[in-house]
Length: 471
Image 1 (cartoon, rainbow, N blue to C red):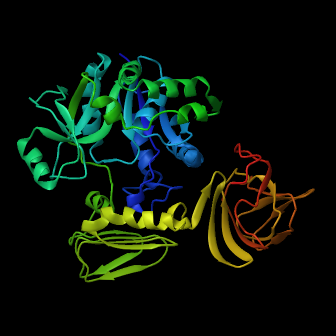
Image 2: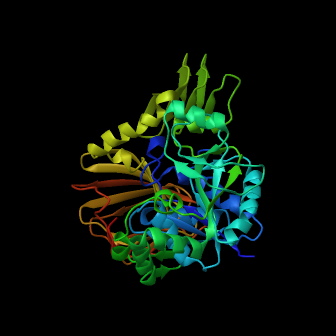
Image 3: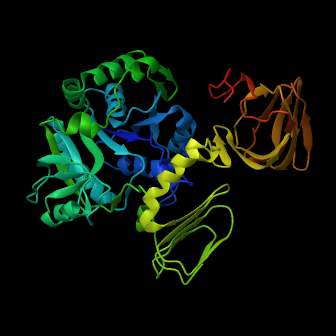
């Protein structure tokens, strides 16, 4: 029996879940549907499968690499992280994973941003499709529909109580009347975007139907570079690949497709309304997260990140509060959040990409306040973490330690900074913060200068491979 290699696709941006999900910290990296992040839950979902390897392949991008690595470490899952130079949709992403695996490995392809409430049912469905995948078929998982959804593609397949079954056809997202007919027929299933197939079988089909894509991905992997658990395909070759989904590029054209029905409480959490559907609710159908309080409300989703949020007399509403933005929407229109994001993007608003709190491999910083010529941040440095040895051309920095203890480098000095102690970093000083201790250290940083952009950094040394960069 071939080994099952989990392949987790973690390249999405999740714009419909703004403002919680941002381009630099998208929904799959957030604990939106439980205590675990969606990426962590996806990786753990495959961990208990018979025959599954203890290492998974995660396809991500450069900006998310350290967060992905940290989350895999947190759940004690070994991972090879394939870093796409630029998103090219799912077909090239899966090709990279197939080229990184052994030819006879069974690739279990799973988007990182799905919720599956019945993990046992999911694992049984994978087991049901294993023999067909080993025999050379491309197996997909069709979700037993619970409603006439117009936001999903559908798969038509005649089931007889056994699985897997041959796929008759894939169909596009329907209008409501068509979707109602699909659901009533019992012959149509939501297209989950999850797959199981041998690596070599997928590459053979890709070579037949999308040869330019396969050639570009193969060339990119032949010239790859490896940095610990990070695997980087050669950028120029990969960017020559056409951009296409695995459905359009392969599944809709292949004669070797089969489907396993899946009834496991699945959701792609594509909107705030969809997230409300999968979360716990009170007796009035309200889902509350954080310091949220409601009175005379029903069917309402409230998520409070940094302050108390109160709602009165609302029905079927969405309220999402973050440190720098608040969203208020009707649940029926929650898919339209993308229109707001597009408008913000056109205006070059930073809130599209970053929240107020920004995560780095050493910890995070929160921009508390700013005006012309000054900025205040709260830095949190994880135990054992070290910032880069750096200097600035336009700003000085004042540091006050408010929790924990830090090891400071300033030019030729090295000293500890304890609670209620401060130090000053002049413009041009070579400096670094390290935390060799067991508890996180919190530092209030006051920056003063004529330019306070994050690119005013000259990195002289860096433990995370960023030496010579300024971002």
